[in-house]
Image 1: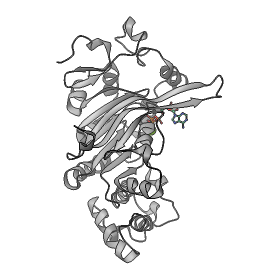
Image 2 (image 1 turned 90 degrees about the horizontal axis):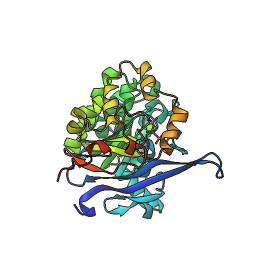
Image 3 (image 1 turned 120 degrees about the vertical axis):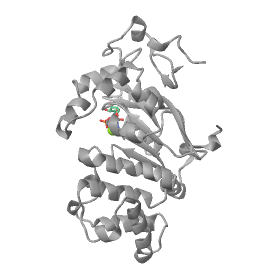
Image 4 (image 1 turned 180 degrees about the vertical axis):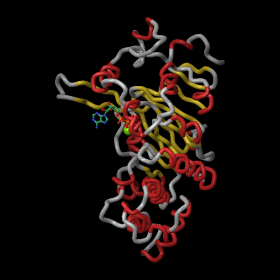
Amino acid sequence: MSTYDKLLDVQRVTAVFHIGSIIGGTRLVAVNDVSFSLDRTRPEIFTLAGESGSGKTTLARLLLHDLEPTSGAVIFEGRDLATIKSRKDTLEFMKKVQPVFQNPFETFSPLRRVEDYLYDTAINFGRAKNRRMASVVVDEALHLVGLSLEEVTRRYPHELSGGQLQRVSVARALIPQPRLLLADEPVSMVDASLRMAIVNLFRKLRDEQQVSVIYITHDLATAYYISDRIAIMLRGLVVESGPVNEVLDRPLHPYTQVLKESVPEPVPEQRAQWIRPIDLGTTEVKEYARIGCKFAGRCPRVMDICRQTNPPDIHVEGRIVKCYLYQGQESS
Ligand SMILES: Nc1ncnc2c1ncn2[C@@H]1O[C@H](COP(=O)(O)OP(=O)(O)OP(=O)(O)O)[C@@H](O)[C@H]1O
Ligand SMILES: [Mg+2]
């Protein structure tokens, strides 16, 4: 596949943060040499999963051109995001790559009617010249998410349920007619019983609107249900990736196995315990700084070599896995 055949091509992208003072501070590689690509002609749902502090949001920021990579490149439709500088080019890019955020109650101000956001988006992205023309565009986008303009008209955010409001934020993201949605934990604030209905929208958009979706989640159950491929992140690294059924039916990396055993998350209030199971502050920074496999300190199957050097990508059983357990078993 040449670059031109790709919608998105993430090439060895790395993001380094300096925490603490410059002298004596720590270098944290929040995204560490990550590569993957999405096909241009065959839309898909690509999940990024991993516990809290694994670099998912930082990677999303790189893909949204909200953060410059320290090294590597993000290419969208053949263009390196680093070359996008002017307002016009930025707007063109934003039309094609739209974010959906975690908490719809933070996305929308409590003091503004939700339809105003939708009208503004239609006008700002050039889909309509005025409100009257925009109403057709807005209604169309709302229909794609199972709502209508009539249902949201004159409503303030608190007058809608979390599920409805998250649908509105997906509708807002669809107004510019993007090719790619980047949804960072889009259902974690939504009742468990409504999550499936919302993530199912992504499938519908993939199949009926040719929109690709990067779905960021802790919830492997919804990921399994809707995605085509999945990448499991651990301290900035993608440690296992491949077709979602291969990876989640039979995870190879011990970290993926541990993550899978932590599912299902029973009730939202207990979710935090799973996401931050251990003393995050120290463990997280320690694991980021670890030489060798970042999981070595917690891995039930750790070997000496795991503490010495970072495992390479091993192609085995239809996926790529960074784990010494599979060395020598590479598929040809
Ligand atoms: N602007 C920043 N400056 C310094 N460190 C940062 C910054 N943004 C993120 N980090 C650190 O980078 C690491 C990855 O953070 P990130 O938010 O990408 O993780 P995440 O996988 O999205 O976590 P969560 O599931 O909690 O949303 C964390 O250790 C975080 O503290
Ligand atoms: Mg995050």
